[in-house]
Structures are given as C-alpha cells and as structure tokens.
Length: 208
DNA sequence: CCCGGGATGATCT
DNA sequence: GATCATCCCGGGG
Image (cartoon, rainbow, N blue to C red; front, side, top):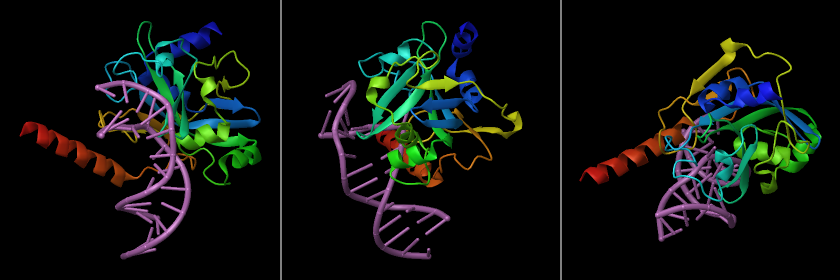
C-alpha cells in the first residue's frame, strides 16, 4: 500500500491522467474511470481549496487516497480522490465512468437506464454515494474502493482540455478523458462560451 | 440534434 | 443574497 500512497502524493495535474482506467466499486456497482479533472490547492481559483480550509472542504487538506465528497447545486454528490504533495491541498474530480458491473443496480439508483455515470452528479448517483463517505479511505476501506487498472489505457487515447462548469481559470487544460469512450460526459461548448461572456462582462464592469 | 432555462439547497459573504 | 466542479426536460430547427 505504500507505493499506492506515494502515487497520490504528487500534484493532481500529474495524478489525474494516470487515474484513467482505474476502477471504483461500491455496493454492487463497479465502473471504469474515463474522465477526470485536476483541482489544485490555494493557487487554483477554480478549486474549492482556493479560500483555505472550511468544514466543507477539509478533506482536500487531508490524507491522500481518501475521498472528498461534496454536495453540488444542493442535490448532487460529486466525488474526488485526494491527491497532493505534502502540506498542500488538491484532488482529482472523477467526472465520468463506464459501468462494467451491476448496471441494473446503477440504473435503479439513477432512475434511468442510459447515461449511468457520464457526469459527476450522475456518477455519484450510480455509486449510491452519501455525504458520510467524505474523507473515506479509498485504498483500504470496503464501502467504497479504488482499484488499480486491470488493463493499461493506451496513452495515445488520453486527451486533455478545459475544465467544465467553472467560471475561473477556464483556460487551463486540466480535464483529461479517454477519447473514444462513449461514457465521457457530453460537453456543451455553448455553455463555456456563455460563461466566458459573463466573466468578460464582469471584467468590463470592473474596468469602468 | 442543439440550445435555453428552471429546479434546488448547502455554503460562504 | 449570490454563487455554484449539475441535471433534466421541453421547444425549436
């Protein structure tokens, strides 16, 4: 387990692409990670750690290889793997996975049979997460396990681009996904444009 | 198929 | 009171 811990004791930017192909298992459902995003520490304006530790984000400052689970838009639970160098904060958001076991269970939890885990909120539903799993040890626990890849991902198929759904540091290519995976979340380029326009507008207001 | 907009509630200012 | 690391549905092309 020592080598696993050291794997996560690096910058999330390095860990994120290497997490593609790892598997997550939780109470009957197993999925292969196909899309991730790196969130750095207090230097990253888009990171929950940007403004320092709070009750909600404390796991980001905690042990690597543990979970950071947070509630999004009041209703969804999103899942991160904590990864950072010593004394810093950081994590890798798991944005999408391909369900390879327990599809029926995942479909029940989701309330539909398609897009079982193609998005961070959907992935949280498919896994049946709850907020109690925030801080959970993913490498040693049994309720929620993170499993090293069973088949190596072809490095040629790993691509990167801007992170989704953020309004700050939108230009950094910290999103990584497997290019030919059908389970990757459908990104709407228009949304990014709208967000860009909104932030540009804010800049213009500030300059007046 | 693509796009717009509402739901929804914890969190922090 | 504003801001979300989101999802889903319905309307128009």
